[in-house]
Length: 94
Image 1 (tube, rainbow, N blue to C red):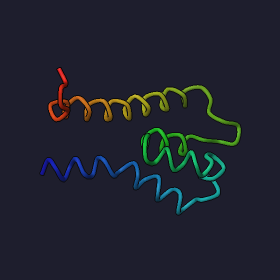
Image 2 (image 1 turned 90 degrees about the vertical axis):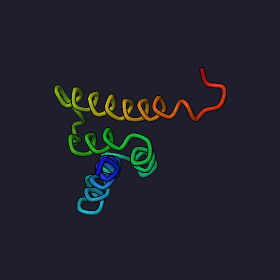
Image 3 (image 1 turned 45 degrees about the vertical axis):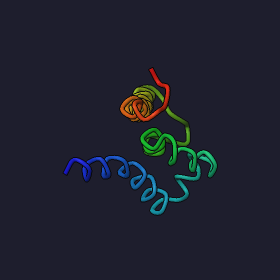
Image 4 (image 1 turned 90 degrees about the horizontal axis):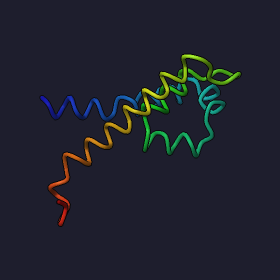
């Protein structure tokens, strides 16, 4: 059951970005270039999802930046916790 929860947690932001990209391609392409969108989906999916949801033609403003920073910290935390939990698999790691 825990593995299923981890799989859904890993694919939820990517699935959300994909659904937004398919449903509203004009908004998605106005917010991000295709290269940044692809890199965002692969490396920082929560940050990409929040940015596309909060984006407006005038840009992000005010409290939107707080949500974007929180999404970035969540992405970095997921990457960092995965690296820390697999540290015993790296040879010669102290």
